Length: 202
Image (cartoon, rainbow, N blue to C red):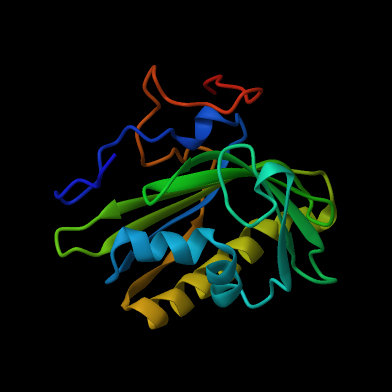
């Protein structure tokens, strides 16, 4: 499927709630001068991730895509060092350069049912509008109260660095309240869903 030439991509990609019933916790919109193909590489491939998130020490892959490629079902493990430990990411949607989503497991973070969602839209000027959404539930631990602010700050700084690299306005991640909903459309009947992943609506 090719990119649309209007101010946004077609809205068929699956919304995050196709893969989780956890609430939307943080979200942000960012605009870059580079086209979606360039920005997608920066936010999805190993070298790009390490470039915008310097706290990521290593990235390795398990399973059929252990050579570094990504597709639905691939597992990517990011090592954030002693503070956050290792985060295991399972790709549940991958449609380059339109976006991707992964379910994350992190033993040192006080959250569960975590899903991250990236949607890239082609702007009228040929740049990219990137929407990032994180869904999860907080565990009943004292430091869980600050996890949303910590994650929002970390991603905002990463996108500011990306804006310096490719040009654009970095935007910011914001903490969402209980009434917040995703800004992208719900999945269509033919939305591809990773086998074994729930397709329930909240």
